[in-house]
Image (cartoon, rainbow, N blue to C red; front, side, top):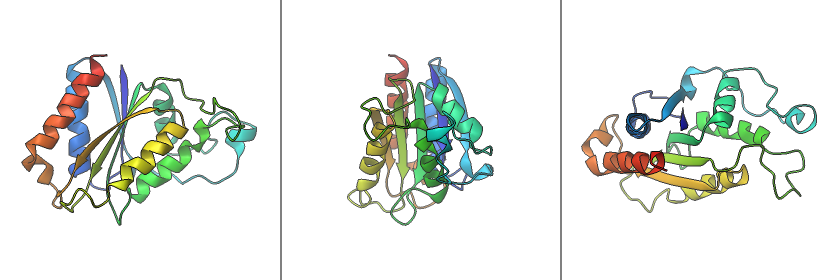
Length: 191
């Protein structure tokens, strides 16, 4: 099983990255092949609306820091998307990446029921952390991106969410959230 993680926090050791890493470490112990990308370390642009991926290419034609990330996602069985909530949504780094996944849609995606270029059966793990402890706040973030993942062909998506994680190491004080990451990794890798 191949798992690729896309870490969207500007803090490489922040709470969302730590929670994603706990999932990845557990999956690796159970035989998964792991690859991880920290978006903040890469130089890339958002989608340029050039439409080349719908007219002349099956992939995004931009050659930048996301080229390898997008290819790794194509090859992966499981995609981990990890981001803290900034101003009510995912980070800008993650949003730029997600916009570039437009290349995974076929040219006729508006009318084609098989609109994804991705192989079927991919699983997504969406890691969402936030400083506010109230789980009702920002509860809509996952549902929006779950719908986006389904649109590009990832029909099975799981949420790992940590609330009340305002300081850099707060996730270490929430063993239940870390245990959820471990349990989910075990369930997915045992398929």
